[in-house]
Length: 101
Image 1 (cartoon, rainbow, N blue to C red):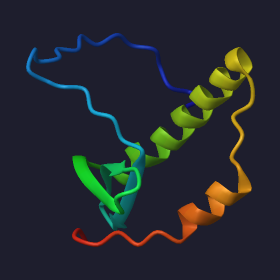
Image 2 (cartoon, one colour):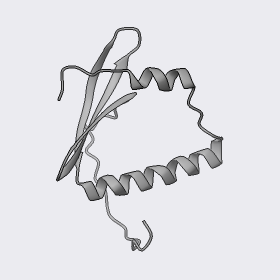
Image 3 (tube, rainbow, N blue to C red):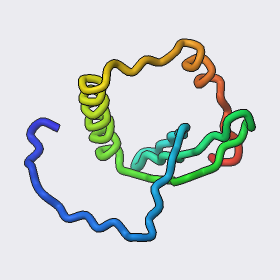
Image 4 (cartoon, rainbow, N blue to C red):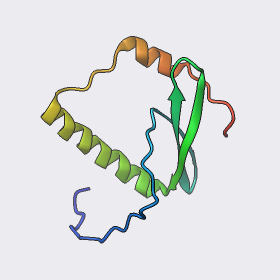
């Protein structure tokens, strides 16, 4: 992000664009893009509903990592450290998502 010039852009958000909630994400990549599948996992059902699929360039993916790291640091400075319980982290690593590849 260093060296990036500040510029202002006008953003038009269509009135029919609904916000979505996602509590799980699947990420795939190939040479020219990263694809993010945002999911809403239904508690206790072993099911998730796809909410959005977003593809971006590798360059934008790297920028996303930097912007997200800064945003999390800013959040933690304002609201306190985000903690990840060990049990939840272990459970997260054992999830297999079927139905999309």
